[in-house]
Structures are given as C-alpha cells and as structure tokens.
Length: 222
Image 1: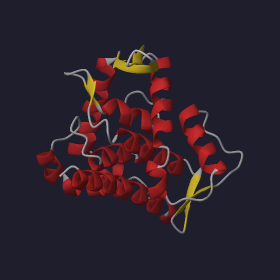
Image 2: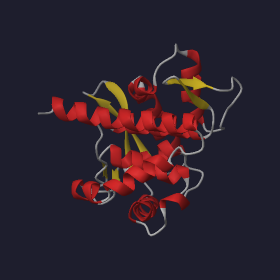
Image 3: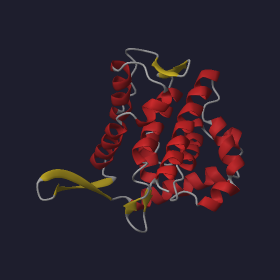
Image 4: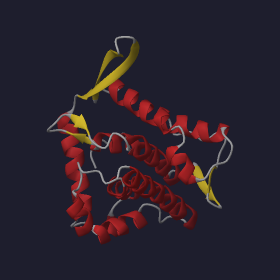
C-alpha cells in the first residue's frame, strides 16, 4: 500500500472521502470506524491484548510514536477496564479529532476555522491531497478484488478493507459489491488477526462492534 507511515485509522479516515464531491461520507459513523482502526492497529502491534473480552494494555511503557495511537493507548490505560465493543464508541470523537489534526499537520487536509452560529469556534476540514486518497482507494480495491491471495495480504491491509466493508463505506464498495465480495471480506477479516488466538479474537470483537453500530443506526433510522 502507498503512504506506509499513515496509521490504519488515518487511512480509514481518508478512504471515507468522496474525492468527486470533495466531502466525507458516512460522517455519523466515522468516529466509530476510525476508533476501530486505532484499536485494531494497537492489537496488531501487540500493545493491546484480549483478556476475556477486555481490551488490556500489555506494556505500561509501550508506545508507537504515533500521537493518535499513543493517545488512545493512554486513554485505555487510565480508564477502568472496558470491552472492545465499548471502546469502539466510548469517547470515539477524541480519536477522530486527533486523526484530523494529524492529517492537517501533514498536509493531507486543509483546516478552516469557522464559528457555529457566529459564536462557537470550530474547524472544518477539506481534502488537500486528492491524488493520495485516490491512490489509497485503488490499492484497497486491489486487496478487495484480488488477484493477490488473502494469505499474502498484510494483516494491516486486510484490516483496512475488512473494517471499511463492515462500516459500509460506499467510497470503497457499493452495497451490491458487499454481497459480491462477502466471502473475500470474511477471509480478509480472518487475516486481520491470525498471529495469535488472542489477536484474532480482539480483531473480531472490534469488527463486530462496527457491524453492530451500523445495524443499530439502521434500526433507529427507520
């Protein structure tokens, strides 16, 4: 994949951008998706482990050097124990805000300061590197479609596509394609955490939480 230094949550956020309309899609679910990406990457790096369904830090001194990931790790360390499902949604906006600020600092986003109702300061983001996002999407499509066997896809790339599909990210695949590639996505989800049973369980828990949040939103939206 291009843009190797970009974290999994950062890449998921960029994938959510519609580069033809120059806006983010699925904004209501984006905090959960980005948080799920951060949890997954921390689990893949061995800094969060599954302990009977609880997201558990493995090393008090362990850090990644990425402020978004390390910020979430510190939050987990300083909070009472929670299940993976809870962490996907609990204060998820913190991780999304951190990803946006990080990408703006890196030149991927443009940050425009505005005021809501002319009073409350806020920041609106625009995409500044459309070609990067299009390239990221093209590479993700190759992971989704093949021809590379699932067993040769990296765990990180497999997680990117599996989580994006779980969140029904239409900038990557349509509803029809979700059905078309259902088996491939399921295999990529398995590939996301094959190193140890605990990692596999953690990744499955996070992905299930994303699917659950989408289902809940669908019911409430009817």
